[in-house]
Image (cartoon, rainbow, N blue to C red):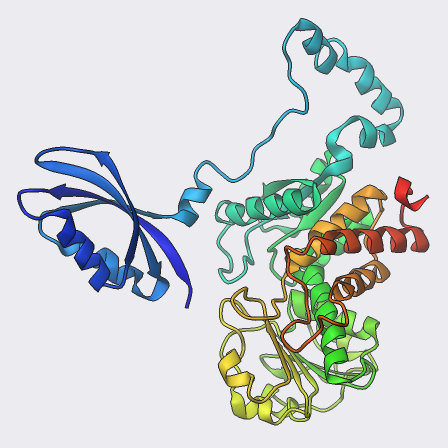
Length: 467
Protein backbone atom coordinates (compact mmCIF):
# COMPACT_ATOMS: atom_id res chain seq x y z
CA UNK A 1 0.00 0.00 0.00
CA UNK A 2 1.33 3.44 -0.92
CA UNK A 3 0.53 6.80 0.66
CA UNK A 4 0.06 10.31 -0.66
CA UNK A 5 -0.78 13.80 0.56
CA UNK A 6 -3.94 15.43 -0.77
CA UNK A 7 -4.67 19.14 -0.51
CA UNK A 8 -8.41 19.82 -0.30
CA UNK A 9 -9.45 23.44 -0.80
CA UNK A 10 -12.86 23.83 0.84
CA UNK A 11 -15.32 26.69 1.39
CA UNK A 12 -17.16 26.26 4.70
CA UNK A 13 -20.53 27.79 5.54
CA UNK A 14 -20.15 28.50 9.27
CA UNK A 15 -23.93 28.71 9.84
CA UNK A 16 -24.34 25.09 8.72
CA UNK A 17 -21.33 23.36 10.35
CA UNK A 18 -17.97 23.99 11.97
CA UNK A 19 -14.50 22.87 11.04
CA UNK A 20 -14.48 20.17 13.71
CA UNK A 21 -17.27 18.39 11.81
CA UNK A 22 -15.14 18.41 8.67
CA UNK A 23 -12.05 17.10 10.48
CA UNK A 24 -14.04 14.32 12.11
CA UNK A 25 -15.58 13.24 8.79
CA UNK A 26 -12.17 13.13 7.07
CA UNK A 27 -10.73 11.09 9.93
CA UNK A 28 -13.58 8.58 9.80
CA UNK A 29 -13.08 8.19 6.03
CA UNK A 30 -9.45 7.20 6.60
CA UNK A 31 -7.58 10.50 6.19
CA UNK A 32 -5.11 12.07 8.61
CA UNK A 33 -5.08 15.90 8.59
CA UNK A 34 -1.48 17.14 8.81
CA UNK A 35 -1.93 20.90 8.23
CA UNK A 36 -4.58 23.58 7.74
CA UNK A 37 -4.03 26.88 5.90
CA UNK A 38 -6.63 29.65 5.96
CA UNK A 39 -6.82 31.12 2.43
CA UNK A 40 -9.71 33.52 3.01
CA UNK A 41 -11.18 34.09 6.46
CA UNK A 42 -14.74 35.28 6.97
CA UNK A 43 -17.66 35.48 9.40
CA UNK A 44 -20.15 33.61 7.20
CA UNK A 45 -17.82 31.53 5.03
CA UNK A 46 -14.11 30.83 4.88
CA UNK A 47 -11.79 29.04 2.47
CA UNK A 48 -9.11 26.69 3.78
CA UNK A 49 -6.53 24.32 2.36
CA UNK A 50 -6.49 21.04 4.26
CA UNK A 51 -3.49 18.74 3.75
CA UNK A 52 -4.47 15.12 4.32
CA UNK A 53 -2.10 12.15 4.60
CA UNK A 54 -3.91 9.32 2.92
CA UNK A 55 -3.59 5.74 1.64
CA UNK A 56 -4.20 5.41 -2.10
CA UNK A 57 -6.96 2.89 -1.42
CA UNK A 58 -9.15 5.39 0.47
CA UNK A 59 -8.43 8.55 -1.54
CA UNK A 60 -11.74 8.55 -3.41
CA UNK A 61 -13.64 7.81 -0.19
CA UNK A 62 -12.18 10.87 1.57
CA UNK A 63 -12.89 13.13 -1.41
CA UNK A 64 -16.47 11.84 -1.77
CA UNK A 65 -17.10 12.28 1.97
CA UNK A 66 -16.13 15.96 1.80
CA UNK A 67 -18.15 16.52 -1.40
CA UNK A 68 -21.31 15.10 0.20
CA UNK A 69 -21.17 17.23 3.37
CA UNK A 70 -23.90 19.88 3.57
CA UNK A 71 -22.37 23.32 4.05
CA UNK A 72 -19.13 22.45 2.27
CA UNK A 73 -18.11 23.44 -1.26
CA UNK A 74 -15.09 21.46 -2.45
CA UNK A 75 -13.24 24.05 -4.54
CA UNK A 76 -10.26 21.98 -5.66
CA UNK A 77 -8.36 18.76 -5.02
CA UNK A 78 -4.63 18.53 -5.65
CA UNK A 79 -1.71 16.52 -4.32
CA UNK A 80 1.99 17.07 -3.83
CA UNK A 81 2.84 15.22 -7.02
CA UNK A 82 0.73 17.59 -9.13
CA UNK A 83 2.03 20.61 -7.24
CA UNK A 84 5.62 19.51 -7.93
CA UNK A 85 4.87 19.59 -11.66
CA UNK A 86 3.29 23.06 -11.81
CA UNK A 87 5.18 25.08 -14.40
CA UNK A 88 7.43 22.13 -15.20
CA UNK A 89 10.26 20.65 -13.15
CA UNK A 90 13.31 22.05 -14.96
CA UNK A 91 14.57 25.40 -16.24
CA UNK A 92 17.57 26.92 -18.04
CA UNK A 93 19.93 29.23 -16.16
CA UNK A 94 22.81 31.30 -17.61
CA UNK A 95 26.36 30.64 -16.42
CA UNK A 96 27.10 34.37 -16.12
CA UNK A 97 25.09 37.59 -15.70
CA UNK A 98 24.70 40.18 -18.46
CA UNK A 99 24.95 43.49 -16.59
CA UNK A 100 26.19 45.97 -19.20
CA UNK A 101 26.91 46.51 -22.90
CA UNK A 102 30.40 45.08 -22.55
CA UNK A 103 28.97 41.80 -21.22
CA UNK A 104 26.41 41.81 -24.04
CA UNK A 105 29.07 42.33 -26.71
CA UNK A 106 31.06 39.32 -25.45
CA UNK A 107 28.23 36.80 -25.11
CA UNK A 108 26.13 37.89 -28.07
CA UNK A 109 26.86 40.63 -30.57
CA UNK A 110 29.37 41.44 -31.95
CA UNK A 111 31.87 39.30 -30.03
CA UNK A 112 30.11 35.97 -30.58
CA UNK A 113 30.91 36.10 -34.33
CA UNK A 114 34.56 35.14 -33.88
CA UNK A 115 33.52 32.13 -31.78
CA UNK A 116 31.03 31.04 -34.45
CA UNK A 117 33.70 31.23 -37.14
CA UNK A 118 36.12 29.24 -35.00
CA UNK A 119 33.59 26.40 -34.79
CA UNK A 120 32.84 26.77 -38.51
CA UNK A 121 36.53 26.17 -39.27
CA UNK A 122 36.82 23.31 -36.76
CA UNK A 123 33.46 21.70 -35.75
CA UNK A 124 35.14 19.79 -32.90
CA UNK A 125 35.51 23.11 -31.08
CA UNK A 126 31.76 22.93 -30.37
CA UNK A 127 32.71 20.64 -27.49
CA UNK A 128 34.77 23.34 -25.80
CA UNK A 129 32.91 26.49 -26.87
CA UNK A 130 29.23 25.45 -26.49
CA UNK A 131 27.03 23.37 -24.19
CA UNK A 132 27.55 20.30 -26.40
CA UNK A 133 30.16 18.68 -24.14
CA UNK A 134 27.70 18.30 -21.26
CA UNK A 135 24.27 18.09 -22.89
CA UNK A 136 22.06 15.08 -23.63
CA UNK A 137 18.74 14.96 -25.52
CA UNK A 138 16.10 12.80 -23.84
CA UNK A 139 13.94 11.87 -26.83
CA UNK A 140 10.56 10.13 -26.92
CA UNK A 141 7.48 9.76 -29.09
CA UNK A 142 5.36 8.74 -26.08
CA UNK A 143 4.41 5.33 -27.48
CA UNK A 144 5.67 3.10 -24.66
CA UNK A 145 5.61 5.03 -21.39
CA UNK A 146 6.20 2.62 -18.50
CA UNK A 147 2.91 1.34 -17.12
CA UNK A 148 0.90 3.72 -19.34
CA UNK A 149 1.62 2.66 -22.92
CA UNK A 150 0.95 4.91 -25.93
CA UNK A 151 -0.08 8.22 -24.35
CA UNK A 152 1.46 10.57 -26.90
CA UNK A 153 4.33 13.03 -26.90
CA UNK A 154 2.84 15.78 -24.72
CA UNK A 155 1.67 13.40 -21.99
CA UNK A 156 5.12 11.79 -21.88
CA UNK A 157 6.81 15.14 -21.12
CA UNK A 158 6.61 14.88 -17.29
CA UNK A 159 8.57 11.61 -17.46
CA UNK A 160 11.23 13.17 -19.68
CA UNK A 161 11.49 16.21 -17.39
CA UNK A 162 11.95 13.91 -14.40
CA UNK A 163 14.72 12.08 -16.20
CA UNK A 164 16.43 15.39 -16.97
CA UNK A 165 16.32 16.23 -13.25
CA UNK A 166 18.01 12.93 -12.38
CA UNK A 167 20.71 13.49 -15.00
CA UNK A 168 21.54 16.84 -13.43
CA UNK A 169 21.25 15.98 -9.75
CA UNK A 170 23.07 12.66 -9.87
CA UNK A 171 25.73 13.27 -12.53
CA UNK A 172 25.83 16.98 -13.33
CA UNK A 173 24.68 16.31 -16.91
CA UNK A 174 22.45 18.90 -18.60
CA UNK A 175 19.59 17.01 -20.24
CA UNK A 176 16.66 18.40 -22.20
CA UNK A 177 13.33 16.66 -22.98
CA UNK A 178 12.51 16.34 -26.69
CA UNK A 179 8.95 15.05 -27.24
CA UNK A 180 8.30 14.26 -30.91
CA UNK A 181 4.74 14.37 -32.24
CA UNK A 182 5.27 11.61 -34.77
CA UNK A 183 5.43 7.81 -34.75
CA UNK A 184 7.00 7.54 -38.18
CA UNK A 185 10.36 5.80 -37.90
CA UNK A 186 12.03 7.70 -40.71
CA UNK A 187 10.77 11.06 -39.46
CA UNK A 188 12.03 10.34 -35.94
CA UNK A 189 15.47 9.36 -37.24
CA UNK A 190 15.62 12.40 -39.52
CA UNK A 191 14.53 14.78 -36.74
CA UNK A 192 17.03 13.46 -34.18
CA UNK A 193 19.84 13.71 -36.72
CA UNK A 194 18.80 17.28 -37.50
CA UNK A 195 18.90 18.43 -33.86
CA UNK A 196 22.02 16.43 -32.92
CA UNK A 197 24.73 19.12 -33.48
CA UNK A 198 24.11 20.75 -30.08
CA UNK A 199 24.01 17.49 -28.10
CA UNK A 200 26.86 15.30 -26.84
CA UNK A 201 24.61 12.23 -26.58
CA UNK A 202 21.10 10.95 -27.32
CA UNK A 203 19.00 9.09 -24.73
CA UNK A 204 16.02 7.41 -26.41
CA UNK A 205 13.10 6.81 -24.07
CA UNK A 206 9.68 5.13 -24.13
CA UNK A 207 9.62 4.30 -27.86
CA UNK A 208 7.67 1.15 -28.65
CA UNK A 209 9.12 -2.07 -30.07
CA UNK A 210 10.03 -3.10 -32.70
CA UNK A 211 10.52 0.46 -34.06
CA UNK A 212 12.91 1.30 -31.23
CA UNK A 213 15.45 -1.27 -32.49
CA UNK A 214 15.71 0.26 -35.97
CA UNK A 215 15.71 3.83 -34.62
CA UNK A 216 18.58 3.16 -32.23
CA UNK A 217 20.60 1.06 -34.70
CA UNK A 218 20.29 3.60 -37.50
CA UNK A 219 21.12 6.57 -35.29
CA UNK A 220 24.14 4.79 -33.78
CA UNK A 221 25.43 4.12 -37.29
CA UNK A 222 24.69 7.57 -38.74
CA UNK A 223 25.67 9.86 -35.85
CA UNK A 224 29.13 10.40 -34.32
CA UNK A 225 27.76 10.78 -30.77
CA UNK A 226 26.56 7.97 -28.46
CA UNK A 227 22.95 6.83 -28.75
CA UNK A 228 21.39 4.83 -25.90
CA UNK A 229 17.87 3.42 -25.64
CA UNK A 230 17.50 3.29 -21.87
CA UNK A 231 14.42 1.03 -21.82
CA UNK A 232 16.51 -1.63 -23.53
CA UNK A 233 20.04 -1.28 -22.29
CA UNK A 234 19.58 0.54 -19.00
CA UNK A 235 17.23 -2.22 -17.85
CA UNK A 236 19.58 -4.94 -19.09
CA UNK A 237 22.63 -3.42 -17.39
CA UNK A 238 21.00 -3.17 -13.98
CA UNK A 239 19.54 -6.70 -14.33
CA UNK A 240 23.00 -8.10 -14.98
CA UNK A 241 24.39 -6.10 -12.05
CA UNK A 242 21.77 -7.58 -9.73
CA UNK A 243 22.24 -11.08 -11.12
CA UNK A 244 26.03 -10.97 -10.65
CA UNK A 245 25.52 -10.34 -6.95
CA UNK A 246 22.55 -12.69 -6.58
CA UNK A 247 24.59 -15.56 -7.99
CA UNK A 248 27.31 -14.85 -5.42
CA UNK A 249 24.73 -15.13 -2.63
CA UNK A 250 23.33 -18.48 -3.84
CA UNK A 251 26.73 -19.88 -4.82
CA UNK A 252 26.02 -20.45 -8.51
CA UNK A 253 27.92 -19.49 -11.67
CA UNK A 254 26.67 -17.55 -14.68
CA UNK A 255 27.73 -20.29 -17.11
CA UNK A 256 25.93 -22.99 -15.13
CA UNK A 257 22.47 -21.50 -14.49
CA UNK A 258 19.34 -21.96 -16.58
CA UNK A 259 17.65 -18.57 -17.13
CA UNK A 260 14.05 -17.94 -18.21
CA UNK A 261 13.33 -14.41 -19.53
CA UNK A 262 9.62 -13.61 -19.92
CA UNK A 263 8.56 -10.74 -22.17
CA UNK A 264 10.72 -10.46 -25.28
CA UNK A 265 10.13 -6.85 -26.20
CA UNK A 266 12.64 -4.00 -26.13
CA UNK A 267 13.92 -4.68 -22.61
CA UNK A 268 13.66 -8.48 -22.88
CA UNK A 269 15.74 -8.69 -26.04
CA UNK A 270 18.48 -6.50 -24.57
CA UNK A 271 18.48 -8.53 -21.34
CA UNK A 272 18.89 -11.73 -23.35
CA UNK A 273 21.79 -10.23 -25.32
CA UNK A 274 23.56 -9.13 -22.15
CA UNK A 275 22.97 -12.48 -20.47
CA UNK A 276 24.71 -14.16 -23.40
CA UNK A 277 27.55 -11.62 -23.25
CA UNK A 278 27.88 -12.26 -19.49
CA UNK A 279 28.33 -16.00 -20.08
CA UNK A 280 24.87 -17.63 -19.75
CA UNK A 281 24.86 -21.01 -21.56
CA UNK A 282 21.23 -22.05 -21.04
CA UNK A 283 18.67 -19.39 -21.99
CA UNK A 284 14.91 -19.68 -22.47
CA UNK A 285 13.28 -16.53 -23.92
CA UNK A 286 9.48 -16.62 -23.51
CA UNK A 287 6.73 -14.44 -24.92
CA UNK A 288 2.92 -14.71 -25.15
CA UNK A 289 3.04 -17.61 -27.57
CA UNK A 290 5.53 -19.58 -25.47
CA UNK A 291 9.24 -20.22 -25.60
CA UNK A 292 11.32 -18.93 -28.50
CA UNK A 293 12.85 -22.17 -29.69
CA UNK A 294 16.43 -22.51 -30.87
CA UNK A 295 16.87 -22.95 -34.64
CA UNK A 296 13.25 -21.98 -35.39
CA UNK A 297 12.35 -19.13 -37.75
CA UNK A 298 10.23 -16.14 -36.65
CA UNK A 299 8.84 -13.03 -38.36
CA UNK A 300 10.15 -10.78 -35.58
CA UNK A 301 13.80 -10.13 -36.54
CA UNK A 302 14.99 -9.94 -32.93
CA UNK A 303 13.29 -13.23 -32.03
CA UNK A 304 14.84 -14.73 -35.13
CA UNK A 305 18.27 -13.53 -33.98
CA UNK A 306 17.74 -15.08 -30.55
CA UNK A 307 16.63 -18.41 -32.05
CA UNK A 308 19.92 -18.64 -33.93
CA UNK A 309 22.02 -18.37 -30.75
CA UNK A 310 23.39 -21.75 -29.64
CA UNK A 311 22.71 -20.97 -25.96
CA UNK A 312 18.93 -20.78 -26.57
CA UNK A 313 17.18 -24.06 -25.72
CA UNK A 314 15.40 -25.96 -28.49
CA UNK A 315 12.51 -27.24 -26.35
CA UNK A 316 9.05 -25.70 -26.85
CA UNK A 317 6.59 -24.95 -24.07
CA UNK A 318 4.66 -22.22 -22.30
CA UNK A 319 5.99 -20.23 -19.35
CA UNK A 320 4.54 -22.61 -16.77
CA UNK A 321 6.24 -25.57 -18.43
CA UNK A 322 9.68 -24.08 -19.11
CA UNK A 323 10.03 -22.49 -15.66
CA UNK A 324 10.37 -25.96 -14.15
CA UNK A 325 13.98 -26.47 -13.04
CA UNK A 326 15.02 -22.89 -13.88
CA UNK A 327 17.61 -21.27 -11.61
CA UNK A 328 16.65 -17.73 -12.61
CA UNK A 329 13.40 -16.08 -13.72
CA UNK A 330 13.55 -12.55 -15.16
CA UNK A 331 10.20 -10.95 -15.94
CA UNK A 332 9.64 -7.82 -18.01
CA UNK A 333 6.07 -8.62 -18.98
CA UNK A 334 2.89 -8.08 -16.94
CA UNK A 335 1.70 -8.46 -13.39
CA UNK A 336 0.19 -11.55 -11.78
CA UNK A 337 1.44 -14.12 -14.28
CA UNK A 338 3.05 -16.43 -11.73
CA UNK A 339 1.95 -17.98 -8.45
CA UNK A 340 3.59 -19.87 -5.62
CA UNK A 341 3.15 -23.27 -7.27
CA UNK A 342 5.07 -22.04 -10.34
CA UNK A 343 8.17 -20.82 -8.48
CA UNK A 344 8.09 -23.94 -6.27
CA UNK A 345 9.02 -25.93 -9.37
CA UNK A 346 12.18 -23.90 -9.98
CA UNK A 347 15.61 -25.23 -8.99
CA UNK A 348 16.72 -24.94 -5.33
CA UNK A 349 18.02 -21.51 -4.25
CA UNK A 350 16.17 -19.86 -7.13
CA UNK A 351 16.38 -16.20 -8.14
CA UNK A 352 13.29 -14.26 -9.27
CA UNK A 353 13.45 -10.76 -10.77
CA UNK A 354 9.77 -9.83 -11.25
CA UNK A 355 10.02 -6.38 -12.83
CA UNK A 356 6.59 -5.70 -14.36
CA UNK A 357 5.27 -2.32 -13.20
CA UNK A 358 3.30 -1.34 -11.27
CA UNK A 359 2.50 -4.94 -10.30
CA UNK A 360 5.24 -7.60 -10.52
CA UNK A 361 4.76 -10.96 -12.23
CA UNK A 362 4.44 -12.50 -8.75
CA UNK A 363 3.99 -10.74 -5.44
CA UNK A 364 6.77 -10.99 -2.85
CA UNK A 365 4.28 -12.44 -0.39
CA UNK A 366 3.75 -15.42 -2.71
CA UNK A 367 7.32 -15.76 -3.93
CA UNK A 368 9.54 -15.26 -0.89
CA UNK A 369 8.66 -18.47 0.98
CA UNK A 370 9.87 -20.45 -2.04
CA UNK A 371 12.70 -18.46 -3.68
CA UNK A 372 16.10 -17.47 -2.31
CA UNK A 373 16.35 -13.97 -3.83
CA UNK A 374 13.50 -11.76 -5.02
CA UNK A 375 13.76 -8.40 -6.80
CA UNK A 376 11.29 -6.04 -8.48
CA UNK A 377 11.26 -2.66 -10.20
CA UNK A 378 9.45 -1.09 -7.24
CA UNK A 379 10.91 1.14 -4.55
CA UNK A 380 8.71 -0.25 -1.75
CA UNK A 381 10.32 -3.72 -1.86
CA UNK A 382 13.96 -4.70 -1.27
CA UNK A 383 16.29 -5.13 -4.27
CA UNK A 384 14.87 -2.51 -6.64
CA UNK A 385 16.06 -3.01 -10.23
CA UNK A 386 16.04 0.60 -11.41
CA UNK A 387 17.54 2.21 -14.54
CA UNK A 388 18.47 5.28 -12.50
CA UNK A 389 21.50 3.26 -11.38
CA UNK A 390 22.75 3.28 -14.98
CA UNK A 391 22.10 6.28 -17.20
CA UNK A 392 23.52 9.16 -15.10
CA UNK A 393 26.96 7.57 -14.66
CA UNK A 394 26.97 6.08 -18.15
CA UNK A 395 26.36 9.42 -19.86
CA UNK A 396 28.75 11.19 -17.48
CA UNK A 397 31.38 8.76 -18.72
CA UNK A 398 30.67 8.96 -22.45
CA UNK A 399 30.55 12.77 -22.33
CA UNK A 400 33.81 13.00 -20.39
CA UNK A 401 35.68 10.85 -22.90
CA UNK A 402 33.62 12.01 -25.92
CA UNK A 403 32.80 8.45 -26.92
CA UNK A 404 31.53 7.88 -30.46
CA UNK A 405 29.19 5.10 -29.36
CA UNK A 406 28.24 2.82 -26.47
CA UNK A 407 29.39 -0.72 -27.20
CA UNK A 408 28.68 -4.06 -25.52
CA UNK A 409 31.91 -4.13 -23.43
CA UNK A 410 30.97 -0.71 -22.02
CA UNK A 411 27.52 -1.96 -21.00
CA UNK A 412 28.96 -5.04 -19.29
CA UNK A 413 31.55 -2.87 -17.53
CA UNK A 414 28.74 -0.65 -16.23
CA UNK A 415 26.91 -3.70 -14.85
CA UNK A 416 30.04 -4.92 -13.09
CA UNK A 417 30.65 -1.45 -11.66
CA UNK A 418 27.14 -1.25 -10.19
CA UNK A 419 27.51 -4.73 -8.70
CA UNK A 420 30.86 -3.76 -7.14
CA UNK A 421 29.24 -0.97 -5.09
CA UNK A 422 27.77 -3.66 -2.81
CA UNK A 423 30.69 -4.93 -0.73
CA UNK A 424 31.14 -8.57 0.28
CA UNK A 425 30.24 -7.63 3.86
CA UNK A 426 27.01 -5.92 2.75
CA UNK A 427 25.89 -8.56 0.26
CA UNK A 428 22.81 -10.52 1.33
CA UNK A 429 19.51 -11.90 0.05
CA UNK A 430 17.89 -8.54 0.83
CA UNK A 431 20.69 -6.39 -0.60
CA UNK A 432 22.06 -7.37 -4.00
CA UNK A 433 21.80 -3.96 -5.66
CA UNK A 434 22.79 -0.51 -4.31
CA UNK A 435 20.40 2.35 -3.64
CA UNK A 436 20.01 4.92 -6.42
CA UNK A 437 21.16 7.50 -3.86
CA UNK A 438 24.43 5.72 -3.14
CA UNK A 439 27.06 8.28 -4.12
CA UNK A 440 29.51 5.62 -5.29
CA UNK A 441 27.27 4.45 -8.15
CA UNK A 442 27.70 7.35 -10.60
CA UNK A 443 31.45 7.56 -9.96
CA UNK A 444 32.08 3.85 -10.41
CA UNK A 445 29.90 3.59 -13.53
CA UNK A 446 31.50 6.70 -15.03
CA UNK A 447 35.01 5.37 -14.43
CA UNK A 448 34.16 1.95 -15.86
CA UNK A 449 32.64 3.53 -18.98
CA UNK A 450 35.64 5.82 -19.58
CA UNK A 451 38.18 3.04 -19.02
CA UNK A 452 36.36 0.62 -21.36
CA UNK A 453 35.77 3.29 -24.02
CA UNK A 454 39.51 4.05 -24.05
CA UNK A 455 40.39 0.34 -24.15
CA UNK A 456 37.97 -0.40 -27.03
CA UNK A 457 38.98 2.65 -29.04
CA UNK A 458 35.66 4.49 -29.04
CA UNK A 459 36.81 7.49 -26.95
CA UNK A 460 38.07 10.70 -28.57
CA UNK A 461 39.39 12.26 -25.39
CA UNK A 462 41.22 11.01 -22.32
CA UNK A 463 39.94 12.78 -19.18
CA UNK A 464 42.65 14.30 -16.94
CA UNK A 465 42.10 11.72 -14.19
CA UNK A 466 42.90 8.92 -16.66
CA UNK A 467 46.14 10.40 -18.02
